[in-house]
Length: 391
Image 1 (spheres, helix red, strand yellow):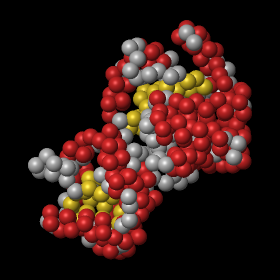
Image 2 (cartoon, rainbow, N blue to C red; image 1 turned 120 degrees about the horizontal axis):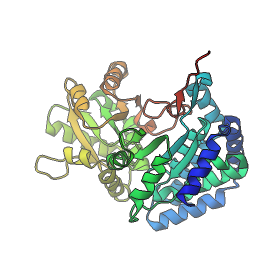
Image 3 (cartoon, rainbow, N blue to C red; image 1 turned 90 degrees about the vertical axis):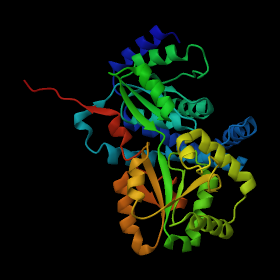
Image 4 (cartoon, rainbow, N blue to C red; image 1 turned 60 degrees about the vertical axis):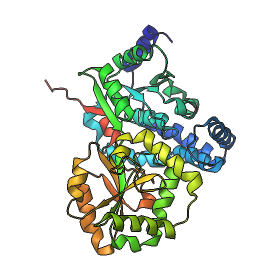
């Protein structure tokens, strides 16, 4: 589609009705019914096998990959999003959509691009998606099925595959930005800097950038074998690829020898397949948190202590708050393993340091229906307040 044609279509649609939430929810209901009935099982299996054999893995086995895709489809269920509308836009009478949102997706979660577009639809916007290369098939499939279920949504959804390595990627993205009232970008610092430079100072950017999540283990927490096992299972399952994945483990200790013994103790009581999971986790960490990995290396430059490739660092109770506040990136999820009577105090400390939520390590990346992104409500972020004076 030529740029002039896209601009004409978008402007024509903008002058008409906003997409109605009930139509979006109705389409999502059909999509959800198809998921539950197994209608998409063959597609999910085929995509899982394609990514597994092609080197783009969301799980170390077909079953894990299928589970990840199925989980994403469940997140966009009608019931879940209907509740989000009530929570995030309880009184929308004084708010209107931003207009046109350009969504730039990241590849660390299948279906993320489509998920972002659906949030834009529910808040009444026209949505243009530039998906990550690894998410193009999944998000494209979800959006096509959405339009098939409710054809009236078609004018509000556009998707463009623009390979990052193409020679004219900057020119194409800049044109899409020029048509948009806001850019919703998912990704790391480099991606956000790239888009911010293209957008200029007057374009609104809604950033869902890479965040730092971690686990804090106190001395008394080392006695909680079930939670320690849950931590290693979490690292194994998420491979540190999500913003809510544990990307570093802080263990309360007074000396380097005490820290080393704590790590050895955790290794001795927990079961996992280090050969299969350790390198994958370490590779993902290098891709998503280069700065963190370099900061947590040993003094001689060699990799320091780790659990399944996840860096381990000692802390003392007095300096933990100051250290977290000094980190050069935003906090998201804090996993906590501690004594029962320590939990309330340490949780408040972590929240005051900047964490948005405190959870058991095993639940750090579990989605709770209706929860916000990084402490913010996307449906609210995708609208604005408008006033017309009475005269």
